[in-house]
Structure formats: C-alpha cells, structure tokens
Image (cartoon, rainbow, N blue to C red; front, top):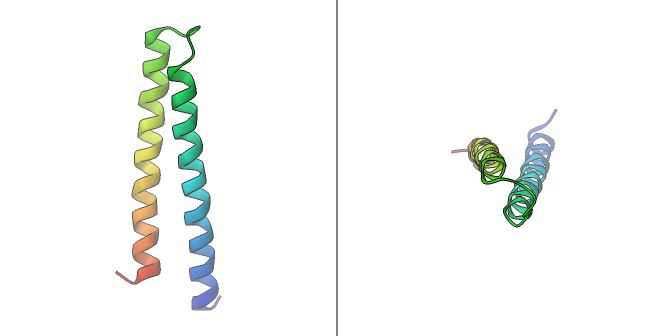
Length: 70
C-alpha cells in the first residue's frame, strides 16, 4: 500500500471516529433529558459515554500524528 493511500485510509478512519464521537455526545444529551431514567442510570450512561469519547480522542490524536508526521 502506498503512502498516499494509507494516509487517505487514516483520514477516513478519523472522519468515522469523529462521527461516532458526535453520536455518543448526542446520545448522552438524549439520556440527560429522559425523565423516565433514574439519576443512577443517567450517570452510568454519561460515565460510559465520557470514557468512550476519551478513548476516541486518544485514538484521533495518534492518527493525526501519523498523518501529520509528528
């Protein structure tokens, strides 16, 4: 696989991860406004979503370093 193709593949992964991150953030907001859930249930979703976002951000930073050569 040549370098340009690899970089394009990584950029595609970055775009997909950003979309996934946005969807998690959107789900967290929906859960916060769901009055049928208990505070504990809402907090669990927020905690899990926050950890997922943190993991995605870490991966995004690594991928961006690969693409930018830094």
